[in-house]
Length: 518
Image 1 (cartoon, rainbow, N blue to C red):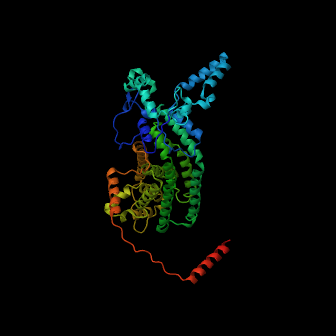
Image 2: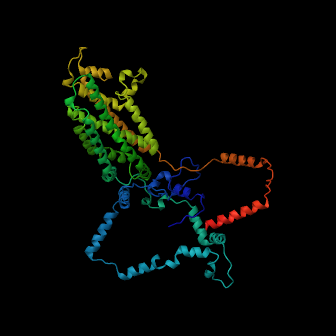
Image 3: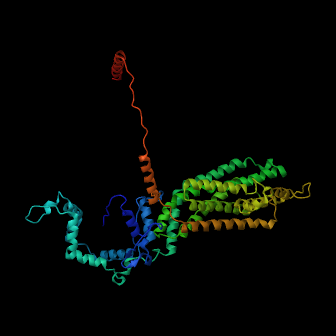
């Protein structure tokens, strides 16, 4: 073990980061670093030497043991565990027991029995001016030998010269064992890394089960309250109630879109841990994003089923299967969209602001708040880029092309076609499957973008109070100019004369205040 000491700002952290190949790209570096003759670009230094920052991060839902077990599982132990198990099994079969004398000898020669004569303690006493005298060997009186003198004498000694010669000679690659360095990026096969990330995601989902249950109950309670406002027995098939049905459908889609905001904070909280483990080559980015996308699908299915069974029980009665899958796709698009925002922004407050702004834009171009015919021609593209617009098209076609809305109105068109045309949502019946394909496309694009953002984005660094040399010179020059500026002259303070009676009254009042204080 080597202890690196030095005053603040001398470059201790920079040296360790250089050895671990974690220097900032903007830092100017001269020379090169090699391990056993291999340059940093000839092997994987992140798997050989690691710099652990004092600002380390961990997932709060996991215990220390679970965190260490996950790290050990991602880094792999190779065949060493099997070898140790085989050795232990054979020792038990052969009845091999360590000799007690050997055990006593190993303990006696270890540092456990030599606490007072540790090497570090010895070195500190040798270089100390006060304690160096007890190690003085010559008959002459003791005179303190400085550290520079010790270093110079060691360099002139044949051992120091031999050591300097060995260090100055570059190490040949053939002289070191190849297993001393790591040449593969990941320690395990990709399938094993994927299973490790799946197990961790399952553990985190169980730890956050109360949050998911709360969001599901929130959906159901809101749906039950809203369902009583649209009781079918009190609503007729006309244009007035058609607008109420349309509003009910849009509100259901809004609830599903906003239900994914919880994933925003969960994803942002884990970004720091992910970047640390990604830079250490624990696993690829897709091994983190795929479990997050597919493992919670059963939970989301149950959430959409509860919404479908309670809130929309009295609104949609045609093609319940198609309606259910439409709700499920809307919820999946919402979840993946918020994950993508979190992976790009990575700041909790800014991510929340961006998410609210995107939700606002999505609602405005969803086809209900602002009708499609009311949009200017140069803004029609926003309608076709909004996921909520496709969901609104699919939900409206599923409801208003049903047989009960096929009554012919006074304008010689059906009521369903009339309400759809007023909103700009009238399309042929086969167009219902296009929103399905569009929502699946949005889901794939958002998840692929989430994976790419995790793969290629740079880990956020800590703010540093560093200024350039030119700016520092300007600041110092400005301070010098201010110090050279002549100060204004001030007049001496003229005291007001006080009479003897006023002085006595002031003294008496001070004495009374002192007595009252005690």
